[in-house]
Image 1 (cartoon, rainbow, N blue to C red):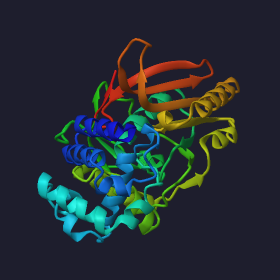
Image 2: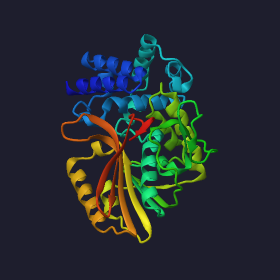
Image 3: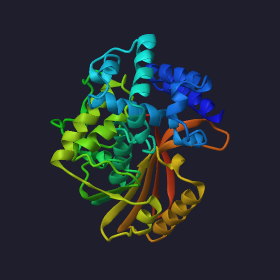
Image 4: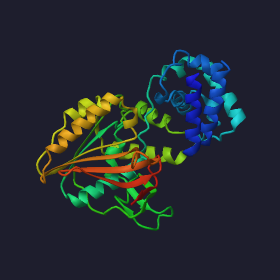
Length: 349
């Protein structure tokens, strides 16, 4: 079955990106699906979901939510995000029991797409913005598509620490609750001040981080054995509480169609790890609209498209996680950095 193959691919991806717990769970989940076990019952009706809908991660996020809200105390003993320790055999038995006992609750969350706009990816986006502002010292109008809860729209409120031991300096407010250790390596981005004139995001299913439900939604999609990611997410919630931002429930194409440029500002459209999930016709629409905005740019009305997405430097080169900046007027495209999937470290070139 394609769904089994897709879950196994996701297990491999989790193993490569530092979540042995989810790699193990997804491997066992695939075997259970193939054998017609409880996972097959829970996922009934979703067998034909496309592979890029990450059905396995949707299931795991739904279960993680039960752990975090206290509805699965036996399973919580094995989740590091809840203070537990993952033990593969015993953990899988508790996971199976949760699927059986809370079948309806797990299925209810399956349609929710994972919200994976990781706070660590601000390291890639903010560094790219500093390159832009160093060249065009204008107030920034910041727009983000696929913004999830809008946390990375607050990237200028985070502290970026050089080196793993905090001794190599830092950029950003030193008292920020979000301290991204080892955020930048290689050639450091320009250390310039950013005048953030406005910030606005969109998402098809935004999470309202002003609510307990929204915060729980975002936390449930962080892999539970990556406790550092969960800690920085919760720190970002504190930043957002002090500086709320607007994220509209809107399609990316409609959102970008509504953008314009303004005199004496730099209009910046950025996004991270969302482009691959867009249907190809929507990608083409957005690309055309970005070119239209770029054609309207002048020295006083700068436009920039800043991305942190899986890309290739050339058609024959391997897939990398690249920070790419295009700036108008001129439509110059530059690869500024490559980074780990969750943004840290970002290595500047």
